[in-house]
Image: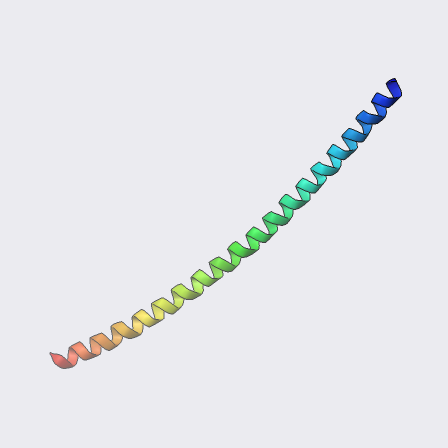
Length: 71
């Protein structure tokens, strides 16, 4: 009877270890995907901010030019 319990316990522990390895691998993959997406979002934010600043500068320059002619 003891050998049945020992085998059952060993099988349980092996399955638990296998599950833990799967959880760890999934967590690492999720981390990698999230970091990649965050990096892309950050790059997009910088690109859009630069475009906004350039457009704002163009508009401000045109406004200043037009305002100068009116005065």
